[in-house]
Length: 155
Image (cartoon, rainbow, N blue to C red; front, side):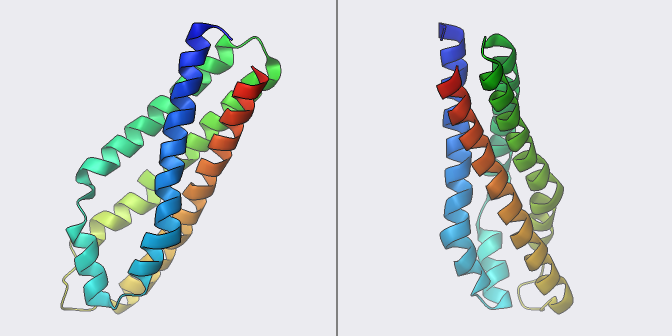
């Protein structure tokens, strides 16, 4: 493996691993905690978490990782590694599309909900959709990491 491919491999492995780690921690600990809270505490807690810095970092880091993975697919001399780099990049794309298309818009709505007036029908439905979308993006991240590991080993 040449130096350029090594650097790209380290980048995609590091970023996809960080993204998976973040999503996995949310899946196993933060979401169960939030889902156990009554409406007012749930909304208040969500509103106290400042995601305006994290969201752009996560999204653009994922976009860059996916793009680097696609470039790595063309740089590598291994067909298997190329296919796995593409699969990893598609996994990162899945994380980003799910996050930006489902999770982030719901989060932005929750940020505006009143803490003292229960939005019964909205709350249960939105929380369920957000939870499912989080599961989807977490498993997209698993695919990305696994594919990038396979690509590095095959390169």
